[in-house]
Image (tube, each protein chain N blue to C red):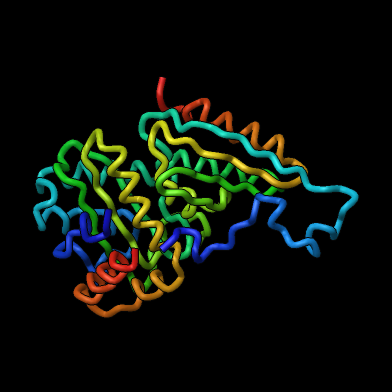
Length: 155
Length: 123
């Protein structure tokens, strides 16, 4: 599996307007709905599920990145997006540091293998110092997608 | 693009440790314990179980690593959540938990039990 298989380019937000966790989740899920990845009517419920998931245990796994994720019946095809913050967001991260890059993943119900594969490719890249650095620094949505292409080709 | 390329991995294979390191305390060799387990919960080793594992592993002094063999072999640091998630271990996957250090036996016991109990997920 590749990042480009599920990251929806139109939903990528190079500069988040939101400055807190819940606002960030809402902004990213709304962007995915605007891009057609889920029905707009499902946005509040999906956001509520993501918030509940974060409350059970932060997906801010450290090093300035968070990977909020949830499965939901309204999602027909696994879809993800990326949002960035220059100010940093409090995700109650494991290392207590602000989050600058958020990779959000929505999965259909009953697709645990696909979900694990997507998490594998996301974290294989996020573990790399150079990938995290570029992800945070490249200027535009197009540059972010180019970075993902490069990561996919390096696999 | 191996997931552990950027993270230091502690070798759990005593034979590969250079003699100069291995002999720093030859009176008390560090026990190394390895045990094979099977991922038995339906959703596999997704983020929440991986977190449970890492939290438990970090409660021990010993080094913990987890190895997956087969088509897509990898060896990851069992104390790193990011590394553990890259295992992408689905239901039925065989993993080897390896611990090296004074409390290795207790660690392997506790970490194996998490898999056995399906991380509290399935009935």
